[in-house]
Length: 376
Image 1 (cartoon, rainbow, N blue to C red):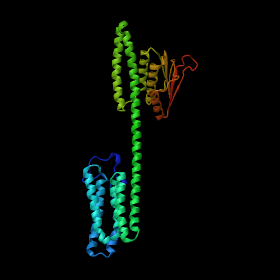
Image 2: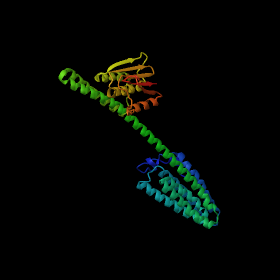
Image 3: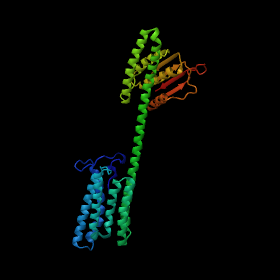
Image 4: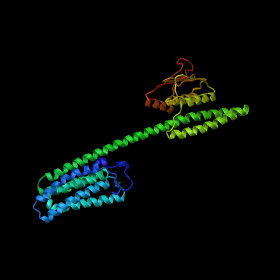
């Protein structure tokens, strides 16, 4: 029978017909298919020991050998082809008809045992065509000839023997189909996870950068009339930040860059100063920048939220080995739902076995503030 392990994925077949001149199929697959040819010994023995004359016996032997050769050739060609393209369809049609003719030529000498040819015809169709048409066509090429042979032989074995072989083929084909569906589902999950990760990265980069750009643009507008030199300086910083953000977007999309802790601390100072928030940054002496990408993303998300939503006057960023804390004295987060940035940060933390906690800075105060803590 045709080895399902060598068939291409149903959802990702080739768009052209592979030819035997460039074989890519493992020899193990051909050997697996060839093993089943031992069952052609039944019609062959029946022809050699039957009452047919030497002529029909010779025809049966030659036809059986030719049947085996054509079967292996069909398996070799069609196992790597897209049956939806005309060349493959022609090969399948001609090859199947040739197998049927060869089986017919062996009938006068082999008698009812010609039904042993039917599982091979069924295998070609079942493993080549799509699932439902293949099972239907394979079932018919076994059932009709075997039923006729049983009528002439008077023994049910000429129907049930090949039927057992077809049942094995159907089971193998269904197993292959289920395995392929499982692989497709896994691929879809991987693609979805990658898309979510890219979307999360783009949000983290854009959310922070656009917030800082907006605040600096508002500051520059206020300074135009009262301090043109300072306004010009702010515009220069806006231009530099816009260029830097463009580079970050490009590298984020290509998954080639994660923010560094040192750069995010400096960016946080700049963003907080532009928003008029006093920054208190404490970096522990044993903190290293390597492996600090989670803390870098957390600083970006935490400071962005503080600048956008808190209305705070003071923000403290403290980085210790294994712990990051961002605390402000703003309005807090009562009644608000976590945004996509915080959800993305928690996903990053779970991926490396870390924990993200969000709580009020002063639970009993009029302005409770908020504290973001990340623990690795």
